[in-house]
Length: 612
Ligand SMILES: Nc1ncnc2c1ncn2[C@@H]1O[C@H](COP(=O)(O)OP(=O)(O)OP(=O)(O)O)[C@@H](O)[C@H]1O
Image (cartoon, rainbow, N blue to C red; front, side):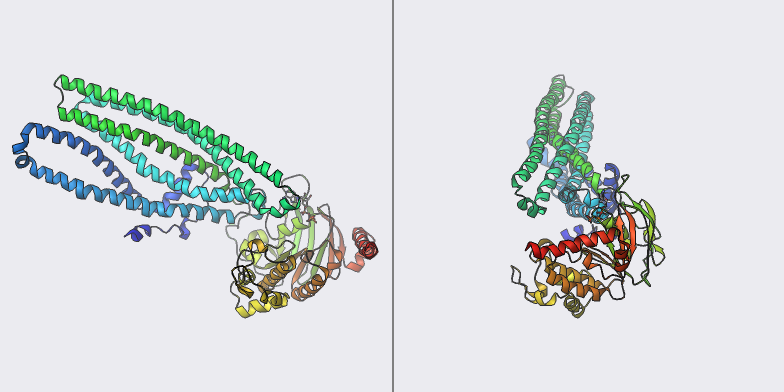
């Protein structure tokens, strides 16, 4: 039965995969949309449960009066049938209603909502451009994804369980009291009004405080995760102390904000106790006064008192729930700041897959300054015929990586365009674009899975034999066969450790090359692909890469010019523009920027043996 209710909604269905809406109300409505069919039933059972609650208290007053009127002897004969009916309500009807309400609330809604929220947020974030992630802490983002789930689920659950129950109960109580005597209902209405104003006022304050608290929590997580993520740099520079201080200042701020939050809670507890005392006074005292004047019966006084005392007990709970609700709303608002950010790089509405026939790349008037006035690239025109191998050289900060990032559409250019086989890359799907480009970078990060999974990342549809052939071409097969991880898995089944830390730089690089070999994309980008390797390994890998480059259009960035000297053509960038363009020999003959860089490197290389 539980499973049937849990499966009424599929939280991961593709229909719920729209981007998160930016405002709180629209966002909650969007999250509840999949449950639309069941919400009326949840609402109805919630209302009926609360009405039964106040009805039962009212009815107990009637039983007292019936007992007083009929006396013990005739009670069962006169009212037995009514008592059986009441028993049916208490034993069958009420548990069924409450049970159904809980099944819908816990199983259908709560059990699905958390993961639905996290999945949607994660999916949306994954779709953000690489540039988006460069501007934020991974820890902060993951914290927001994770805490968003419970915050939404808690809010909705509380709205349905507590707020709905409380509001209905209060309305029921007013109706019941006005049935007894309107003079009892008036003070209750006044009290409910006063209480609502108080709750609203304090809850708004709580929401603001909670939002700040949540913000501080995300920032602290971001700092802590950043330290773990860059632990090598931290250790290398012996900056443990500095990192501690950096995290500690965030934790101090978190503590202060939490203290502010708790102070507010304590203040609230005082306020609510005072308001509760007033309720007893203004309802029970008039009830006794009315009884003294013969206007109401003892049973009715008992019912009015019981209703009030129950409401009294409930008011603390309502306050707590409302505060939690607003606190969660603060968390949701804080989370939405980054989770609902629109994608900067998106597929055009009519985007088609990129069709690569020859792999010709044409760059026209390309300009990108990262929103600043300079930096990046500034007006690049470059035509790379199909199958040409182009080396990109230039001093640090010349715009080489920017050019590659724009080609991969990690960002959209501020001006100009890039065409592949005549198709503007902004008009094709990003997935098809990147699937046609193989990239090997200097800092290859591997995913914390098996070697096989890492190589297969290049082409999940490849066979085992193709995967092994790719590893062999990348000169990786031999060392892979000798791998053994901590769990005893060997060869292609061995896990590589987080980001591939269990392997040497050269081994990581060879796996990355195997992955690109398996991908077999018509365009190949090598961004300092061999600079992390020692010269013996580099030579072997250079040979492999030359073989892999066959028949492909290649763009290779390298600071070490010897690695691109044998390219068909070399383009030299300087301050974001093309300074020189030609073959290695032509550029040396020109005696310009390239020749200068080459001589400096050749000179440095010659000096090494002397220094040794
Ligand atoms: N995310 C960014 N935001 C703002 N400016 C940036 C960003 N990335 C790069 N730049 C600027 O753009 C210019 C070119 O940087 P780019 O990384 O493309 O150079 P590069 O030639 O690849 O340098 P290197 O050889 O050192 O890797 C630099 O002045 C840099 O400060």
